[in-house]
Image (cartoon, rainbow, N blue to C red; front, side, top):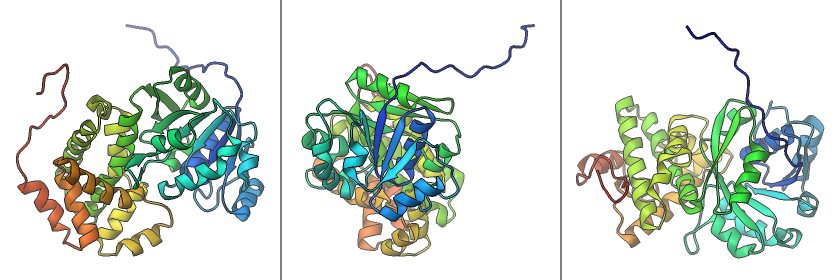
Length: 355
C-alpha cells in the first residue's frame, strides 16, 4: 500500500509586481482587481461614478455589483482614466461592448507603446461584426493584445471557489505574463494562441445561456437541457469555423467550459435574463430587473444576421432571435430544434477526418 502523503498547494512563481488598470467596475472587473491585489499587484479599478469609487475605497467592497465581498487593500478605485492608467504595465478592459470603443478612444493617450492589454468583454461590436480584440488592435495598434475568457462567474471568483480561465494571444510572452499575474491557488490560467476562437466562444455562449434560462422557466427536464447545450456547442463551432477559428478551441474552457457554466447557473446574467423572458416579461423588463449588462441579448441579433449572411445552419440562435425580436412563442425554439434537418452528432474535425 502506498503511504499517504499530505497534499500541498502548488507554489507559484515569484513574479514581477505590476501596476494594473482595470477599466470597468462591474462584477468581473472587480473580481480581476481582487485577484491581482491579492497576488501583490497594485490594482486600480476605473469606475464612471465618483460616488461608487469613494464607496469602494472606504468600505472595501463594490456595493452595486458584489455587495458583501471584501476587497484586498491593494484595490483602489477611481473615476479618472488618467489616474487609473498612470504607469500601468497591465490593462484589463471589462467594459460592456456598447461602450467599449468610446472608452478606448478616451483612454488611448494614456496607454504607452507595448502595454499589455487584455479584453475581458464577451460581446460583439455591431459595425463590421468585430470582436473586442479586433477593436483593441484597431484603436490601440501600439498595444500588445490578449483575451481572457472561461467559465468565470465573478461571484464565485471573489469567494475563491477554484476555477480556470484562458488567456488567448499569439504573443507567448504576453500569455506567460498574465498566467503569472493572475494564477493562484483557486484561479488557474491556461494559454491558447487561437485568440479569435477563444473570444468567439465567450461571445456566442451568451446566446445559449439566454435560451437555457428561458427553458428553465418553462420547466424543461435535464435531458432537454443537456440536449440543448450539446447542440449549442455544435452551432458555436460551426459558426466559428466559418469565420476562421479552430474548432478544437471549443472543446476547452473558453468553449464547452464557459457554455456549461453560463447555461447551468442562476449566477449567469444572461441566464437570469432568459429566465425572466421565459416567465413572460419583455426584454426591457428583464434587463431592467437584472440591473447589469447581458451581452447575449445584443449578440443574438448580430449572430442570427451573420449566420443568414454566411448561410451557416444555426437553428437555435435563429429561432431565439425570432422569439425575442419578433414576438414568436417560446415553443418556436423547441420546434426549430426538434424538426430541423438531421446533422452528425459530433461535428468536430481532427486531422482532416470528420466523425
